[in-house]
Image (tube, rainbow, N blue to C red; front, top):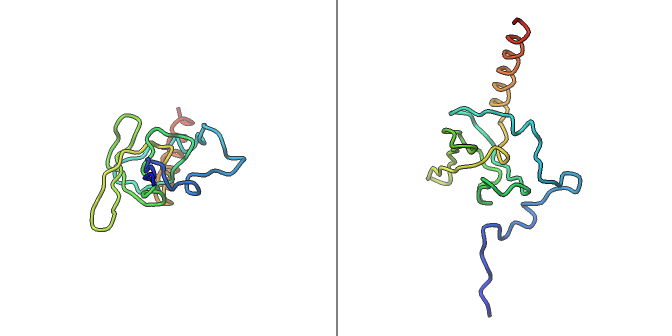
Length: 118
């Protein structure tokens, strides 16, 4: 018997699947526009159409804390059991938690008010 290959995306047939109308390489622009700051909590939700900066499938659905930014990616700390793992994930695979989304919306409203004043 031949040993089964164990690539980076093995056992992800149902996990990394999109609905028919959601297929395509371009993720929604609103998710890419978010600027996360250190301390923000984020959900790790893998976008299968974007390979760059994709975390391993074991982190799909986990909640992490943004530590910093490296190039186009973010450093995210995730607790796995008793360990804390540090991942480098692009923004296509991150979603803001409700409290982070609220902070981002407030900052956006303040920026709009400043633009209207000037």
